[in-house]
Every structure is written in C-alpha cells, then in structure tokens.
Amino acid sequence: MSAFNNTTSQPLIFLLTGIPGLGASQMWISIPICLLYVIALFGNSMILFVVIREPNLHEPMYYFLSMLSATDLGLTICTLSTTLGVFWFNNRDINLDACIMQMFFLHGLTFMESGVLLAMAFDRFVAICAPLHYATILTNTKIAQIGVAVVIRDVAVMIPVVLLLKRLSFCRSKVLSHSYCYHVDVIQLSCNDNRVNSIMGLFALFTTTGIDCPCILISYVMIIRSVLNIASPEERHKAFNTCVSHISAVSIFYIPLISLSLVHRYGQKAPPFIHTIMANVFLLIPPVLNPIIYSVKTKQIRRAIIKHFLSMRVQM
Image (cartoon, rainbow, N blue to C red; front, top):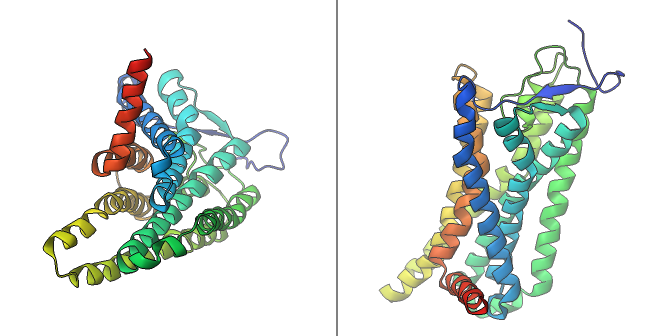
C-alpha cells in the first residue's frame, strides 16, 4: 500500500465521518446538531454584545466572561462548516493543510478556554478572599495582560504540535472518526512512528489543561476555607452563589474533555458511534450551556439581555 505525505505531488485527502452505522438517518440527526450550533452562536454573541454595550458590565468578572464567550464562539465556528458539510451534503473530503489549520484552532481554542476558566477562578478568589484589593489587583491592564498571556501560551504549545504532523506519512485508511480533525485521531492513521507526535500532544495537554485544572481546584479550596470563616450564613450563601456559574462552566468543560481523551486513548474497543457522540458532546455542550448558565444565574447579565430585547420591541 502506497504511503502519502506532504512531499508527494498528490494532495493528501482525509475522509471525515458523521455518525457510523446510521447512514440515511444522518440528515435527521443533523437537525438537533444544527439547532445546537444556532444556540451556541446566538448565545455567545449575545453575551459579547451586552458586555460591550452595557457600561455597568465593564468589570473584571464580565471581561473574563466575554473572553469565555469569544472562545466558545471560535470553537463553534471552526468546526461548523465541516460538521454540517458532512451531515447535510455528505461532503467528507478535507486535505491535510485544511485539517492542520482546523486542528490548530480547535485545540488552541480548547486550551484557551481552559486558561480563561483559570483566570475566572482567580477573579473569584480575589473577589472573595481579598475583596478590599480587588480593584487594585484586577485592573484593566492586568486583565488585558492575562488575556494576551493565555493566547501566547496556547499558540506556543500548538505550533510544534501541528508542525510535527507534516513529517508523518499515511498509508492506511485515511478515514477520520469525527466530522472534524482531532489530533489523536489523525496521528493514529500514520504508518510511521508517531511517538513524538503523541508525546508532544500529551505535553501540550499537560502544560495547559493539566496545569489549569489543579490550579482551579486549589483556588476553590482556598475560596471554601475563606467562605467558611464568614460568620453570617447569609453572607456565606451569597459568596458561594457568586461561584456557582463558574463551577458549572468548569464542570461542563473538563468532564467531556477528560472523557473524550480517555475514550480515544484507551477505548479502541468501544463502538465507533461512542467516539462520535463523545466528540460532539465535548464540542458543543460548553458553547451551548455557558451562555444559558450565565444568563440564568447572573442577574446583571440577565437584566442586560432583557433590557436589550425590550429596547428592540420598542424600536419595532
């Protein structure tokens, strides 16, 4: 069987996959998937819009929330064309360069979301454990520096990950397991030694989410200790209540991410549709649920959205 890499004159084409074994039913399954994309796009755009437009939301907590929404918006957009192309038009072809580009944004934005969640945990830590210094610690300059640092970190870890893919040759089946390019999925199709790629992928994972997740846990241990020292039960409840939305966002991000990584690396005997369902859950659940959670649990965001819709009705 001939091997293909980026040095050959013939472009390397991968085949994306919808949901294995469902064939004609994919068109119907695409309807709820499309609906989830619409909800994710609308919800995160709305959060960004109200944070930008409303002066009373120009605070550190909402700046970090807008970063989270922008990241979720990017994650949704970067897989929208290939996913709906597979489900609606059975357009499964994707060349290596397009696959690498999609992979760069998909994994980079995933790591970025992890970094933003860590920044939001730091925001809650300072607000609860050092409220008198909140305004002096989290200045606009400091928030911008945190955002830039998250972007630089994720670009730095992703560049070697995607560049190392160019050295691989592919001589087996070039059928991917998902409707988008996923790093582990691609390197498993290579016919030469991919240990360096696997190690680099794990390095990128551990230096981003592998650091962020324990730091978030540590921050909440310190937050809980600080809250338990508050004498008033009402004040304790109020302090915990400010963290509920963030804890929910952390849970719906890390649980699918860890589950998908474990299924890919250790669940080779699992039915193919399990991989696909897990991948779509990981991809769409955080962008869909984050705007809903913050709109329901955060009074200021909810009021700003209602105010915007009421003003639209008045104008009509």
